[in-house]
Image (cartoon, rainbow, N blue to C red):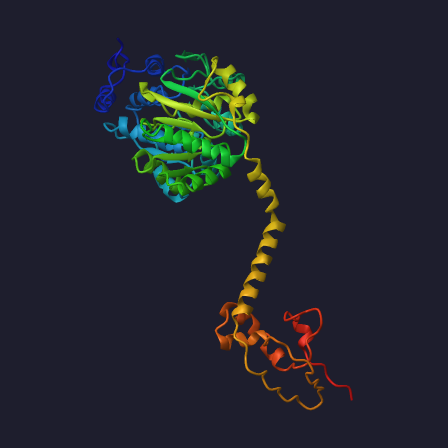
Length: 498
């Protein structure tokens, strides 16, 4: 059986690996490390959770033991599609490179340029970054890429999905042609193969599993649900409660950031220990949320596909797909968050009548049929039409009518409880030049502004008092058809004509 000591790694690296508790390399590590140490280009294909990160971190540490970086001229460059993946790779370098004195610079968004510039000025042996932030520094004249010896493109298919390929092509032109390139991905569609052919020179292909395969340690089930979001949320809550005995923690994937926020609020209202992670959050919030989930402070994490690629959270017991991914390759990455490093895991995916084409694409890609948990879509109960109809009836107009009815009810209640005064208030004298009209009609009700003297509804009376000076100067007959709700403009006393 092959051990790490058989792969040609330096003693410093072997000591750090042993301290981390590892002795036997995974298949991708055993296949990629020896040719990487020979400075060959690598095209590594392996399902997620098999140790691809260590397969390039460990040989890079060995190769970097000789030489030092100069200011603003990094020796190696690692490109990652997301900030979280970049931060995770930096953690791996710190863990396995503890016996080395290497400068590691992390260039990602959400962090000030000044702090990153200070690291670059000291010289970076390892530069880990997302493509956009790297180009920002280059355009500011803060980086010179002519000293890069090793280029690593990690999660290449995710780079393609996120539209980073033009940026990577720009970056590749800044790096010497004689560089060593390590190319890793969990899936290898035709577009990625063309990309690999363009970037790699006579590469060693290391493929330890068929492309787009899923880990055998993950139990996969699909669950039928009606299309409505509130019904899907109810199905999800039942699934979580049904798995309560085995569920340590779980990641719940949604396709849209809005759905992440909505589902997070719903689960929080129902008393679940839950957090949210999506691309619109600032970097500090994202890292804090991820740290809380890793530390066990949160049991559930609702996330978009920003958490689907390469995040190493070893003890995730369950994955729930609230939405089936549009791209079938994302399914492999999502369920790869569980069942890592030989552990067992479970993955449940909610499927509606609109998702059948996505399910067919996933089953075709992974080459197997996924079992239904409690019957297929034909076994679903009828949707709650009465609830839907009621919601439609209570649209904007329905809500306005309800508010109007509430106001009428409050007004009748106030009038019924208002104590009637013994006599009407005496009329005030009108200034010269103005016409007075004596009241010839008596009403059974006192004017509404008297409610303040009889402990009426103070909130309503405050509004009525705004017109008090108009009503005090008017003791004429009440206009027919308006009742007590007289428009303010009709209460103004007209000037007498000369």
